[in-house]
Amino acid sequence: MDESILEITEYRGEGFKPLVFFGAWRVAVLRYLDELHPERIARMERHMETDEVFVLQEGRAVLLMGGKDPRVEAVAPQVMEIGRLYNVRCTAWHSVIMSREATILLVENYDTGDANSEYVELTRDQRRQVVEVARSELPEFFG
Image (cartoon, rainbow, N blue to C red; front, side):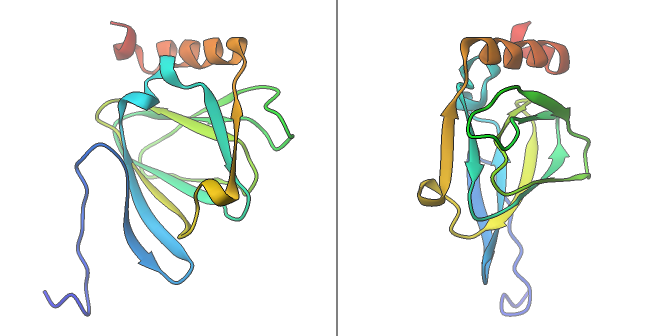
């Protein structure tokens, strides 16, 4: 197929990989990597200039939401369903835990990164809560 009219791409590697850019946005794929193991999630992030859309394509995943206050007061888990769109609003704290076979499609501003995002460390109790959510929703990590 002529790439000037149709671009076909995929990603089957590990971690985050932007695939398509146009104008002000990009489409990326997020796949499991070891830093997303539930026992390693120590912080949340928020993007100051963009919403971020998550679409679970395969596997299992849980969005971890932390509100919009300057600090994360509580972690609210949202179990994701395949094919549903989850729009994380601009300035909302978030992270994700995902099964090893999960694939998530992401849509956000093309220049989203450290320069326009913030990060906050989770407390010991919040980290424990993340692990408890994973034990319930993704028990294979704790075999």
